[in-house]
Amino acid sequence: MIKKESRNDIRKKRHNRIRNISGTKEIPRLNVFRSNKEIFAQVIDDVLCTTLASSSSVELKIKNGGNKEGAALVGADIAKKCIKLKIKKVVFDRGGYLYHGRVAALADAARTNGLEF
Image (cartoon, rainbow, N blue to C red; front, side, top):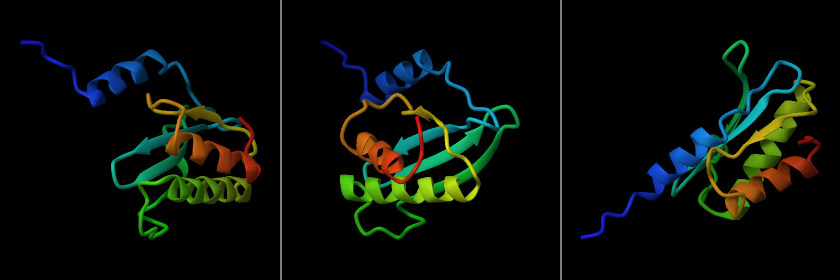
């Protein structure tokens, strides 16, 4: 019998492989986490181990946060919060997820609202 590895285990391995990404106070890390129903984004300073800004589909009370439109709203919101904190450049950490669908929609919305990465 063939045992298939779960998708989340494969994602975690991929995330560990690309985990060399780190953020500083000048250029923090924009981390993305997506579940089946929601999407979350955090801007993190890895030197001080603090979260500078965060946004999620739960926080914005989006009815369906598990689609591209919800992800785009979260990306726009996190970009506005970063601009308010005078953060223009970030390092994008896709969290081991493929750059496709909701993750790409969040990134594109953040770029169009003023973030550079």
